[in-house]
Length: 324
Length: 267
Image (cartoon, rainbow over all chains, first blue to last red; front, side, top):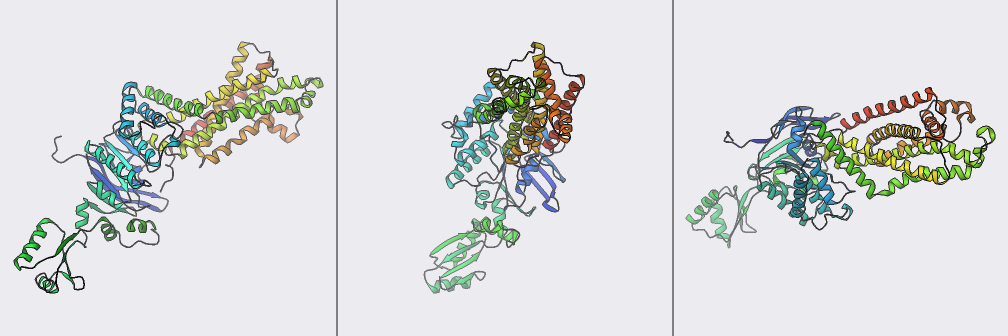
């Protein structure tokens, strides 16, 4: 590649979509770098699914420039479709076929040769731990197995860019971990992934970059660390053995909040190594003994709360997301 | 591969998928074929003696009625099989898999072509079974090989038209339940045609409706071909015009619905 910065797998600007007079997407810009995991984070009704449907050529945007895998979605949807894989929110499997037949159907539609198709299907059954259930009807599959088959079907043609719309919604914690592992392995293999989620932890765990979508607008974006740094709430908590040590420290660190009852001092800071070292040096210099130290970085719950504000009545899903 | 080769290849893949569905879940085919067989036995053995008495200038009987009613029953078979198309199309459209197909580089026509050809094969199997039962209970048509071929051609053409219509109805339906109800009128129309009793025995208003609706000329043509009394030119023209007209209009309607369809459960 001639350019020194990595190419964009998805480049979208000014994306708008309305249904009637309801604005679902309002001027959304989005860039996803090749080979990265990008998370679109937001509550129900934020517009995540609509964005995925537009990027994957299922529905047209009302306005905006969108290039996916190097092709314009409006001018050349066929080329986009040939390059992408999509696993939607709703199970996209054929319930009347077996797991293996579902994968074979995909191999045929991807125009793989008979031999390559068989090979790829066997490979995916193995990779997704479905070999034993391959010839069983889907009615016998668990939720986690169906989700794995769904993703395996998306991967039959080896797409380099995949969309995962809420890949772990409704899965039990164990299946969720399995799905995370699969997503990480795909990314390690160089596949670009755009996923949507309403689980803050999921975006934090998986994504290189996160965009927070709320009521059709991107209200914040960046790496997980960047987002965390942007909001107040990060601090170092110092606990002391005796009140006199607390007093000394409180005099030294005037920016800190004192909690005399618990003998703790809350020092604002991002918890980075440099700031931590500086803090410890100051305490050492004054010969103050600290009993215990803990770092509190804000999590994405705080980020979400800070950037989207209080949940409103017309937005019931917020509550669920914020409580986790 | 060329675009045409892809279209044919993808359509064949979709056809295989639909035939696999039919084979794995034969209850649908059995239900669709069962209905005309029940009608055949009911009308011949329960009503046939009485209804046949009015045929052949009052000298007919159960045998004459069997000869009369089988073409009508074959048309009912075609209409009944078309019901299945609406249901299977709607099952596809309301499920998640259609969105997967639409995000893949698949020939646009393949999904619907697979359904239509699959249903056509299902219809032909149904017609063969019903015809087998008819022959078993004594139906002895006087048609030669050419007339047989022509009769089957007419049935296939009419089936093609009704299947496209049913495909469009399946696409237009918001749920599988709706899709299983809207094409019901197709199984009622043969009763309001010359399928079961001659139209001249009907009261005035109904008779006019029966004479001008598409099921009558199609039934008359098949009946004429099978019983060795060549149908009139007007009847043949009406049969071909109705069949191609319904097929073309439904095909265009279905294509429009398919291309402008919004994904399931948009938010």
